[in-house]
Length: 317
Image (cartoon, rainbow, N blue to C red):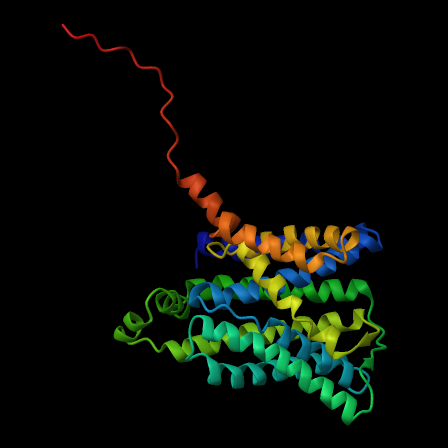
């Protein structure tokens, strides 16, 4: 493996090493903002790795994020923390496997509607269980995990996700997914198995989201279905990935960074109109930036520069 091949991996590790010092250099406000941004970066990147090449728009991100958070709420004080994370990861994978087997043969708007309905169904099921079985509406989370530890765990997860995304893009599976997204019948003609490839990536993407939810859970003292399974999160992840664009690996990262700042501004100054403004942002992105910021930048860089050289006039004799 030559230096050119290793360059993206080294760049990711170097950036992670520098960002690891963030909790030691900033105050609590900026650390909180950084934690939220890292969380959104993980979710947007994981979403983009599945929906980008396959062109399946999933609105089920909050299902797996909420599963991870609720795993911590139920088992956080019973099992050691590493084992809690492992259970959250496996639970997210199991749920994604069931959902993928049932839905990945669907396409277009049918898949979008199903995944949106799934998030509401899971929220209602958890609510019913809490009210009728546990006789409560939520659970308290008291874990001795600092904000700095949460930041480092999220940074480590994001690093692994980015390294995996680079490896996927260069692998045969990544090529197969791009072919499937462009023309699924052609992919079958070349001997690729679209359903198996989509299922594997969907499970991996969903497991990352579940793990992110588990890592974020100790930030909340109290977790209930409305908090863990807030459908707005799924739309936020889609908007971030679309804003940044999925033509480049760093597209969802850029979108998550910009939208995290925008969410902070909107939530602080316009909390009552947050959903409305979020919808307006989505409309603007769809109409003005269909390929995202990364796609737009690629177009600008690929555009030939105008020839501004002075030419001597040609005189006919």
